Amino acid sequence: MPEQLSQLRILNEEIVACRKCPRLVRYREKVAREKRRAYREWNYWGKPIPGFGDAHAQLLILGLAPAAHGANRTGRVFTGDRSGDFLYAALHKAGFANQPTSVQRYDGLQLTNAYISATCRCAPPDNKPLPKEIENCRGYLEREMEILKPKAVLALGKIAWDAYLEILKQRGVIASRSLYRFAHGAEAEVVPDSPRLFGVYHPSQQNTQTGRVTPAMYAVVLRRIRSFLEK
Image (cartoon, rainbow, N blue to C red; front, side, top):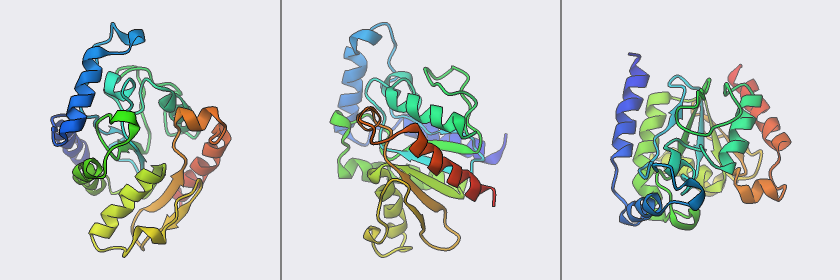
């Protein structure tokens, strides 16, 4: 078994067993018990969500947190909700995914040269994890970075952007996150020999339905990332 794949599997087993944040444990399990009426026949996952993708990926995609009735239901990041519908369609068009849809864990979806993770691994109330909850998950992201050694990081939204920069700040690599301003299409070579950081607005239903984010906007950034990775 390739070393990266083995290390990621061990890490993901730890993530799935995590109970560090009592508020999130209560919420994710409550949602899994009560369910949404449309999914009452589902056996909800109801646990932290591990990363997903190519164990040899050059691109690490970092989201915010699982959706209560999306990944918290299906057990796979960005699977079973509108955000995932948008994201995987964009990744498929850009050549990072073998199919444009993501419905459940075993639907055949595979990523090529991309790995998707989350700033917070449990579904939070109102999609808003607390700072301490993000901090509790930071070690998992750091270990993913150490295993994957990505060439690029794509932050889906400002919280993910800040979460990545906070790791660099804690390591003493940068003095302040404020030196790197988030925006859709933002790009930063934070320090030499570190991953190139790219930013896009989060593919939330609120952003995609209002037109704040469009497929064309994602396509432009993903083309830039692909060109960078091919250098």
